Image (cartoon, rainbow, N blue to C red; front, side):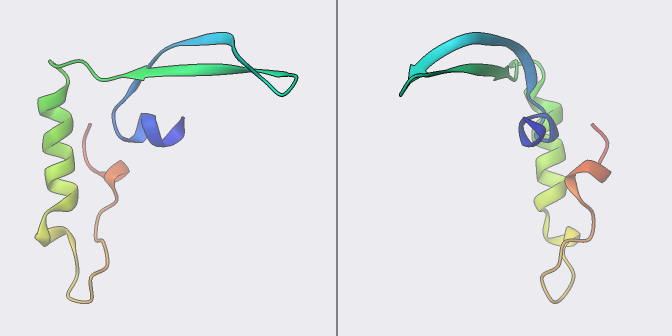
Length: 69
């Protein structure tokens, strides 16, 4: 769930007791990105993955969380 939020997904809701497997029930979290939100998220990804964001030895300079959302 933290990774989904970091990548720009929004929690839409939780389907409670959505699955029943081997005697236990499980909830399912549903996340989404809307089409109108995508351009800003894509720009963050492009900046995060740009060659300028990596040092000569291949280390990341700025984390995704450090880039404006």
